[in-house]
Image 1: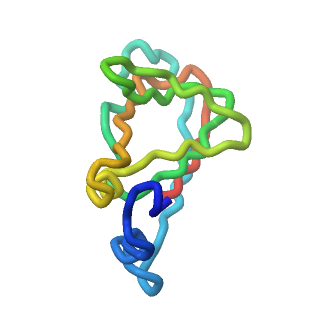
Image 2: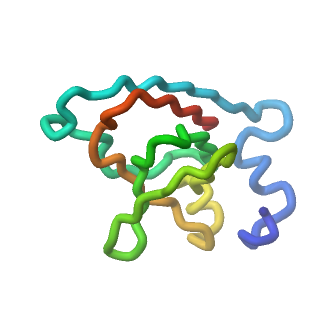
Length: 119
């Protein structure tokens, strides 16, 4: 990845703490179904602040949208596959060779769902 971003071999590793201090966080979220999704707000537009985010979405619920140009595109979950989002820190380190993804979840789901995220 560092080659594609035109970075030095250890630049990403060092920027995120080096071999001694690098870390990650796993967040598992349960989203209960919403009885009246039309009366609530989803997750507002945002980008990921870190380096990379790996999201294992619920394959039965398509809710995540990403900005492509001026439009929002729904990300269709693929069974047993991660969604990889480039974060703001990687965009800065790469001098915008990799763009941080703007994303939104426009409304809560009408079914229960679970998502796992590695930050």
